[in-house]
Image (cartoon, rainbow, N blue to C red; front, side):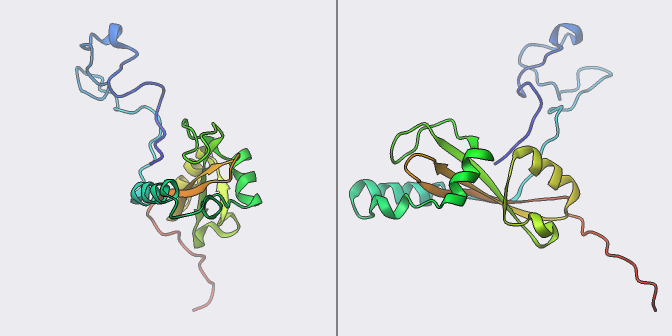
Length: 173
């Protein structure tokens, strides 16, 4: 799940000394006349989230047991590798196949309302911008190793305003 938050966690409050808020009390807790939101930054709220962790775990178990060949799972194409290098965010863990640190997560967007943007890799900032402008679109997050070419769908979800975009009015009757 992609969540964009402000600079501090929900259990930390940067203005604790000024407000007199007890330690460990979240910023969103009303403790006086000026209650603050729990997350000061913009939060994307994905819908219809599907996590593929169990499928990933089963596939990796098959690779380790020798039931599935490494060449079958390490087959990322050049377009996906380039997207991982230029648009991907570091996954923060090693590749499950080769143990290299070059594992990245790439977000792909799809949807009719996206027009020419559909089918392209996008950054988290781009996702936030699209979510504020477009009614609904799907996001597929793929993890990719730039070293051994491992790739697997991590999760998919729907973002957007949820409101259909108004069409153009015609002058006719």
